[in-house]
Length: 209
Image 1 (cartoon, rainbow, N blue to C red):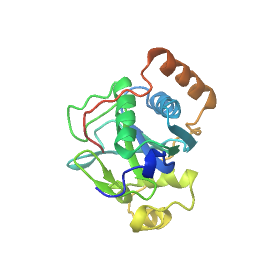
Image 2 (cartoon, rainbow, N blue to C red):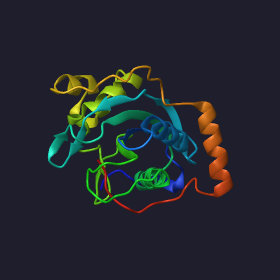
Image 3 (tube, rainbow, N blue to C red):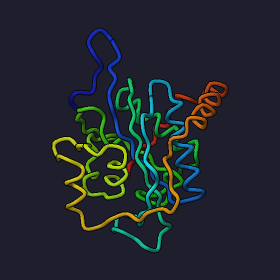
């Protein structure tokens, strides 16, 4: 793993990151909005923007599967002082709190949160690879990312707009969809985390889409 430690002397480093969100079970839009609010309430994380949701066909280990429940997908931009694995722990805690069950790799899920990029860090561990190794192949990541950052780049792979243009598939629009970032909801989540002490809970279960 390279470039994942903080600054010398323990000074926190603030990095810009991209978090991909997905859900194909339950009240998908509400789950995504709750997840963004919980992310915004996480100590050391500021959500600076969030896309509106888009719709996509489920992707399984065997490929796209039209018989599976349809996904809603979105992207959130963050600024964080958390190190990569601490951010991953926070995301997995939010997944757990929203009913995520890891019975099947790339199976249906109430909530899926992935770190796509975190600053210019590169790492490859059993739990986390940065940049996300499959993001460049996924319109359901690239399209909502472009909603909130037209000049986005995916590490050495280049401009997100160019990567998206090279893909054969596209997501489907969601009628009436709006940004997932709701300051009032985030404030409520902050209060809940403070009262319950769950704001920085960690779930060590691995797995990412």
